[in-house]
Length: 291
Ligand code: NAP
Image 1 (cartoon, rainbow, N blue to C red):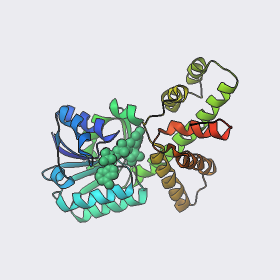
Image 2: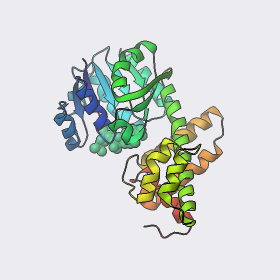
Image 3: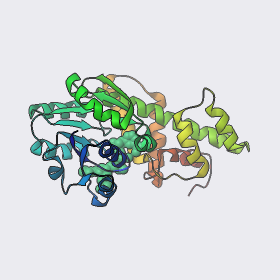
Image 4: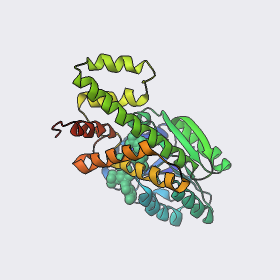
């Protein structure tokens, strides 16, 4: 059993840290807003008062933070405090080039760092059924695998440091495109007076079926756009996709359009809502008075 410092106990980090504690690991959580560490403590973990406090004495450091600058800030404290040999698992979704750079910085201090961004949403985290795409060195990935398998169901090593983030960027491109078309399809069905639950059920059994349809259609139908995965985070991810596509010299024309729809959703004040709130932007574009 490992001592795991877990930094970032938000929508995703909280259930992941609780699953690790439930599997018998000694999990020491740190969250900027301390109250969010309470569920971990109730699940048998401990709460630390700072990143350094959490990391001291840990074999493994797990990060689940919003964006690249957040990881950079927290990592600086980790590298200053953790012992050589410490394994750092970054579950956050960040820039692939930054992930490779951070792994190199960790190696300079004698530590090992892998990027292990996840997909599967809040439900995947709650149910320990995440898909985890890993970038990093073979030996570090092998050491991390038993922990990753506590929180994930599909755990795949996809290449060297940064490669996990590249795959995650592709994931976010596919998910955003799917949500945008699902929103259009539901607006279309509504305009035709279709029986929406029946339509969603039968669509789910055919080629149009997907996890996006399963998880996001109910939110669009109910109008409950509580996060989930915030539009602000998907906006960040579409920026990662467009920068990485430009760096590779590939074009993502549909992705560029969807990135604008995500940006418009944010500009309309919906950045704190779930990414299924793309529906609200499609409705607005169609002349609806969406509040
Ligand atoms: P979240 O609920 O906002 O949680 C992020 C946590 O990080 C919060 O607890 C926050 O603390 C903390 N934090 C933010 N900036 C920090 C900083 N500079 N220093 C220290 N702590 C900081 O976000 P999330 O939904 O869990 O997402 C986390 C990551 O997972 C993101 O990269 C996201 O893209 C990715 N992801 C999310 C989902 C999803 O469905 N939500 C799915 C797959 C991947 P406070 O409590 O003080 O704000």
